[in-house]
Length: 100
Image (cartoon, helix red, strand yellow):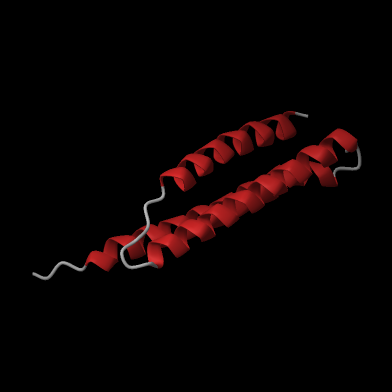
């Protein structure tokens, strides 16, 4: 059996893409209350923050996918840590937005 060292990087790259797509779904759900007739400026700001968080997540996922495409793949410690921090902040923001 031949081991393909690029296969694990490819699977990881695809996982980052799926994570970005799921973040898009969460961002759309977090923005949904901004379309309510009773939405105020605070709701609009929270929705804008949710979209900014989504954009940051997608940018980081793109950066990590490009790093995985190199030969050899570039380590992503800082990218993964930043992604985790933004994900937590994104989850808190979405929770606050939904409870308004």
